[in-house]
Image (cartoon, rainbow, N blue to C red):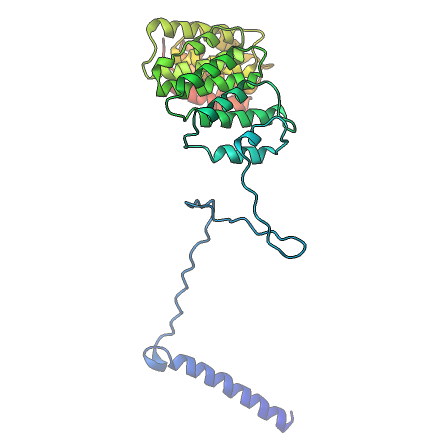
Length: 325
């Protein structure tokens, strides 16, 4: 090793040793104190999820013309354009105009214009039926908030429901929005819902049953009305033409109202491997609500460990509610 190399190595060793001594002696208590590991710095956890603000924190970005002039942001479409059949506005623009009206009084002329739009069967150009449903649903949200116009809006909803040539989804919406009006003014009454319950349209009958069964839970139905509702639900459960969603709802109503005559139907549906699982699950739940004999209890117990895994948890839940009736 050359003298130059030896000198360089000695110098490096001295520098390292000196740094260590300096760090050690700088600790509290001098060079004889125990070394202390610096405390870990507390780091705030990152924010996750959606954070709401009172105002829109995302302002519209400016746009410029080719010569560098900032363009003026267009105003939201007027109500007439938002509900026009020929304006060809996109759904998002139409909905934005309606959302700006929520919680505001819009005046009798605008209300009348919006009610006429609800019952107009023509589709606005550029929108399909699903988009029209969304648009008219928001129109009804605005209308149902207008004070003093509950009966006028209820009349439009009754007309929409009663029109069997109208879109089925909109007729269903009519029943749903009627409930909000009835809760504000009980004199509007539940007759339209009872008409739906007794109808030959299971899907609409099921929607009406949901609302009436909730009313029954709050003590709002007489014994006669409760029997009427249970009879209608039993009819849909046993229907060969009703679709699974309507039969599922009807099973739930039968369980809630203790319609014992639904028990054999629930047994048959629960065992039917051709039936959809949501319907079979509803049947299992109904068996738990209605209770029964030892045979039914044994059947539910067998499902909890049976080969059909999707029925195991519903069967466990049904057994927890099971009583001998």
